[in-house]
Amino acid sequence: MRDDWKEKLNNIREDSYWKLWEDTFIIESLLLRDNYTNAYIIFSQILESYLSLRCQNLSLCQPNLETLVNEWTKLTNADKNWVDLLHELRKKRNDIIHKQESITFESFKSLWRRNGFPVDKINKNQNLINLIIPTLQKVCGSKNTPPPDTLLSSLSQWGLTFLQS
Image 1 (tube, one colour):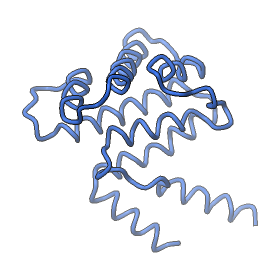
Image 2 (cartoon, rainbow, N blue to C red; image 1 turned 180 degrees about the vertical axis):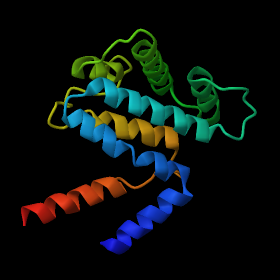
Image 3 (cartoon, rainbow, N blue to C red; image 1 turned 60 degrees about the horizontal axis):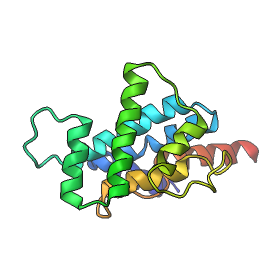
Image 4 (tube, one colour; image 1 turned 180 degrees about the horizontal axis):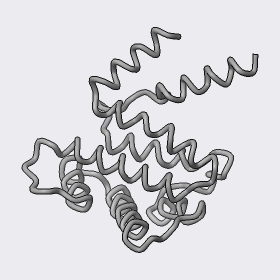
């Protein structure tokens, strides 16, 4: 187990995608506590960072999230549902930041529903992470997708198991 942790730690140090992926543990933790607004903010920050990494070879002058989504769309030839979803996620992020809005479980889920993604089976037990992770994976691209379990989740699970025994 410790070798696995060392390997993950090395990957985090060497790979920007892995480093960002660690924050999905924080998103999951916030969602489990029904803290949807903070989870959304962290999710949107990771999303923007991944878009920035994917577009880093382009000469963009002070790119904002809208520009990054547009450039990512050109790079990947993404279909309309993905493009619309990313723009809606961007708009919601701006509303939360600039208008001090909050987001509920249902409004979080509806961002995907309105853009043609199946969300009927997503409930609080399955959590919104089942929408977030595939979105981040899509933006990362298949060559850059980190593993499903993070170092933090692995350490947390080990700690919980240790405490229970």
